[in-house]
Image (cartoon, rainbow, N blue to C red):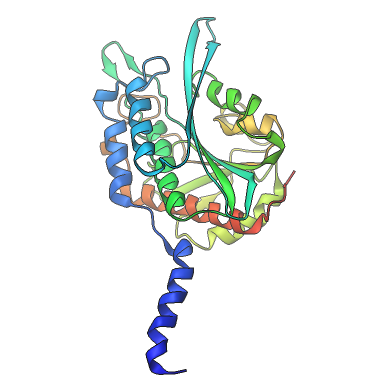
Length: 302
């Protein structure tokens, strides 16, 4: 090969592998989290989280305007039989090879609001998952996946997984064509650099994919809080929105940290997150999604 051609070949190879090496925008990720978990947003309780919803819609419209963003408004009763209105936000990046097969990436953007004048900002729960989802939407807009990816920002998780239940009961696509849900809820706060993943107990076939993904991170990855040895609140099978996918037999992976002193407390603030850990978790979720996007080949795991 002529020496003059070698730089061109290298550039072409790098361009071909851009999808694999593209990184999440760390600065934007943290800026989004700081904003969404600020006092101005009032704790994002369902029925009072219009400002958060507007922020997400504005952010999505900036970089994904070529794809329709859908807001699904739904009503429900809470545990005390009080009527509420929720709003799910979804946007779909079409797949280049399997456009009619879907991976759903999800996170809930609601939290518990303001109590006795004190704002429960919910930086980790779950502004962290929400802003991770926003970052991943940006990534896949610029690095199109093989399968279509639905980015689902669910409302009313704190009131009983109502937004996810609404989505899976009446999805925007054929439910049988949803291959996998990857759900993020509390992914930014753990000084031990440990992230837990649930889903392999209910769907053991996920393990071989995760084995490949784990090679791409230095985080400690655990499989806990699922199976018969975990009971009550210590079993996370139905602890977040992924539970509604499981209920309909759809394979899922749930990424989350252990409960910490800020869980559902006013101290769940941006200042308490672990930025390096958070960024690495989002990168790991991206790499995990890449593995499934590459290996599923349009086939169901059910």
